[in-house]
Image (cartoon, helix red, strand yellow):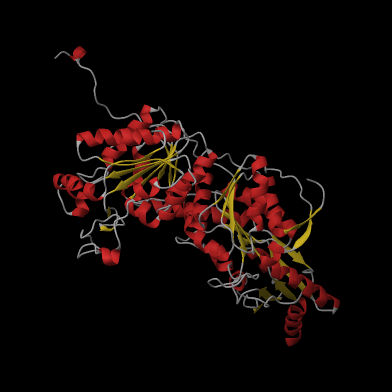
Length: 251
Length: 355
């Protein structure tokens, strides 16, 4: 095929910096970063957006996105984002948080930020473990799942149950959009991209709070290779954390 | 804004903040400071600013961090137990060089303690109450007028150095009513532009980041040294204190805030009785007025440090003048423990007559 007949069908999103990430092989933060960047490109808001990084593997997002970024204390990203959004009400503001950050230490902040209907977008990456600190039990760790602090497996009678944040937040009046997606198959990546785009649209066009939970892998701390880890998403995570749009006030 | 008013200290803080251009307030109710959010929630809508009653002290301080990172003049207020909750956020603000005002109308502790006046948060305020070895600017008003004036000044200092600032007062100064001349705010000419603040205009080439994480070899050490150079600069340029009857004083009473008001009366009584005693009142607790103590003890004067706690600022006095004889008189905070002028005068007499 001659060069002039070729057309570009795939490229790095504009909002993503041309750098290598530090993520482990098989980790899906990179895919999720791309989807967030694509959503920014879709609304042409790279030069307006303020990102709030949280504590965990995703803290370095200021190196990967070509946007202004505040680094929040552990769990507090929604409160930091609230302060930023009140100062710049017409700037898109998003947080990017892991399960320990959002669903354990930061439960109060995410719940009340959603309840205020703060017009921000929250990307919640659930990989059922604390990645950066070395694979401890998370609020989303599945029943019987072994981690470095649940070496005999999560015992619901003592450790409680994996928490379903999307369902909880969908129940709040302030939430306009809440969805759970996965990125373990090409089809689901496309669906996840649509949900993340919708979550930015909810903020940019409707000035309302939107939340997307993305089921993700942590091969290193799960003790799996990338393919095994990817397979676990469908085999173990999706049955407990069902995918879908749990709330969409625009629908 | 020129009519003399009769208001509470807490209201004076709120008025001073709004006059200084603060348009973002984040807080949570706690006695004895709730007059501040109440006043601001009432006045802020007309000024076009934002008032958020947050779900917690932790959320409030992080909202302040977010607003500050975006370049806004912003504040929070609380009282001792709530200030403890804010320490994580204050440490992050210090580390990421976010200016902003934190008001502590402190109350007695530890724990839930009581709602009475207390000066037991001096260590927490001046030594860096959170983790990591930082300092914040700490100002100690002793009157309703100073609650207004120093609130404005705190914003200016905080913006000048990109260091969080605290107003440290207590239930006495916050709840008492006095005359206030609410003069207009004038921004100092030397305030630097906030060109570091986030505006949401990042590109691949240039993006602004407000952060406290430095992992590279040597990076964090350099960052910490930079912070400590600013503290040293403040020590040179921003110290404030007030002297009363110090010229021929042989005993220097020293106290700040509410206790300084009581000590002032005690010194007046002592002067009337013929004792050569004066009062040295620190206005900035950090930076601490070390030189003033050196100046006023250069000829062998003794110091009597009076606090509404079991001895905190006295440590800084002793470090400032290791050669001087420094004694302490204090009461552990709690209902009924506020010393009277006569009580402090009795201490003055004791110290003057011992030798």
